[in-house]
Length: 313
Length: 294
Image (tube, rainbow over all chains, first blue to last red; front, top):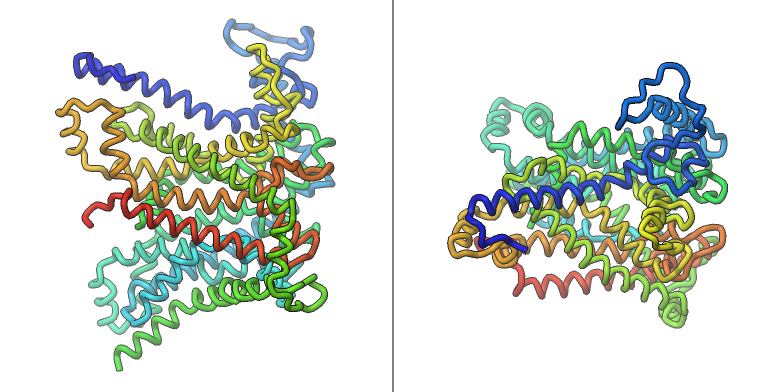
């Protein structure tokens, strides 16, 4: 396996390139299912349901290329690309306009839930984290322990009784079960923000207190402005969590016009015998794309946050 | 006097959490413990039946089927995910590898894909007739099985989809590996240790706290597998027995059969198993996990 007998530097360099090749292959394998998903949306139903391994649609007839086709070797002929574009726009608009899935409505519901939930989660978690980091009081340690312990409670234990609680509150068949709990903060987010707030020097808030500011003013004028990256991270994590959540909508939402995207996608799929794969993949792409774009735009902050999560003791 | 004022402020600031914890966690948990000892068909009030729910579950064939399937899945998925994540992280954390950051992003991407979409993508890839996996296999002359219909492959399919989503762990391991002091590796290199031995004797012990954390998270997660088996192995023809999981039976008991007592009993048994496993892992880790500076 290792090339220890080589002269040290040459050996290290060749090892590095072998490693590079291995990692490239592995990375491609991780991304490929996503590439294949998008590629399926560039095909017609017949092209998708074929043994073809090509990422682009096969030309349907040899007569297809018309007009100017400077067929350079090694390059896809333009007709294939334009076919792909036509197929894609057909597929995506078919899903968007499909009366049985009502994509625009589910998108609206998901965005309402996401907005209310993200605002509530970020604000409340920050407030609680302030109480756990910037105010010295007896009992603070005990409350912090409850935060850590509840991170372990599996959702299925809560599923049945939460259903009862929401039913008793009259929230079943409304979107409330999906966003109101966020306004009470989330254990992981409280933890993350508490760690961040602990790192802000005491002198800064003490200076504000000397100037007569109360906790509320200190929170808004000192802590929040200094914690924007951490707050953004919490908002981002929670947005993705809400966008992806399937189980809670499955249980608490029973009215068709209150479905979220994840739930709508499942309904679309459950009649898979009837729905062609190019359309199923178009629907999936439409649900996946916003999250991936968001991630690519915010990659750095993201990676830092995940690392922080794993390194807590 | 001052202490008192701070205590009031502290309680006030943490009150959203305290109230939420009470209303959405502690009270529901208490309710579910109580329901687990009752016959509760939702429309009628619960009636105390002692241990009947637990007894009838333990006498139910499907209960033992899902226990067996879930244990098998966890037993394969936990080591598989851990191994893949460690190997990927070790590669990606090697200094001086070109495009390391881009590769790490590629490995992380699948964890952002909504479970529903993940399930659909893999349904398509594993499709018996037109799926990419069987298309590729046919190129090398193998006729692939009908992955999602043939029960023998159910657990394998679930494990593969979970390995696809190890990105979060990979990122955690990379961060942990980057924290290992470079001097340790330098010393090992002078002693003539190769990369594999360096990984085994330095990296693994140094990142053992992160491994422990991830294995516990993975254990809790795999015992709760729901969305994947729900989408992949349940369709209009019913549930594929080989892909039937603990939480699918729990869900059915609660929201299909409306036997809230049974569902609650299952939830509590699961919670106790999770607590016990976590306890065992933490106890074992005292000997195996190396905490720096303690």
